[in-house]
Length: 262
Image (tube, rainbow, N blue to C red; front, side, top):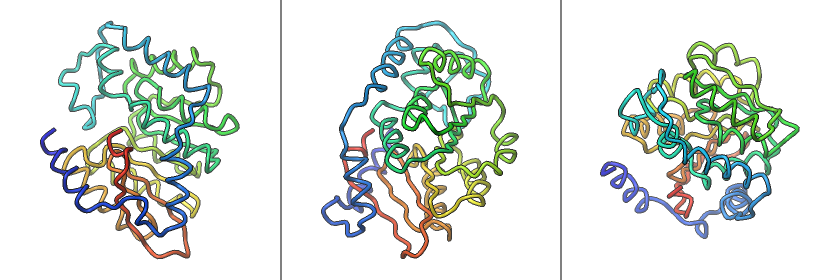
């Protein structure tokens, strides 16, 4: 926590607000996604499921914690603790919903399903699209599947396999939006990024969760921003978003915004 506070203070010093940004594309992103506070009907159902999960103290044995589960100190947890500590907050998941909806993304990959609440937001954002989501833990995967059934979501393919085994098999799918939220180690994040960047086109959007999780994750984010195919990287502290648009100068923006705290 102390390290993250230090990261944020430095971020505030180096960052800029929306009034000092000259890129029309970034202004459009801020206006239609980050500043958009419209609540959609589908949000109610998802948050109702979250509220039910937060009341469940049933124990669960976790098989695949990964580097992103430092907040879970044991291989045994409960459903309510898992919901509170591992799932993205509603505000963050709703940013992803708006990205999918605004850019009309139809072929989405989520690396790290957890209990499936963020997946549900991605699914509802474009009912004509498809969400492929990967979860390494079989019991967590089973819980996510139950949540999808409760929410009557039909456009989700949930794959319960280790990331390193399944991602190479998915490269032919040409995903137009990818959310990285499964393994918060530098090595794994970069490995998955480089694999998937090979299939990216100029309309692809990659979103990374917890880019300030650790010094290693910050280093991974910096390397991703410097990758030659990445032409715009938007750092909102809570998320890192990269675009592959051609015919524009390479640009990296640290945006000071209320979404930093999501």
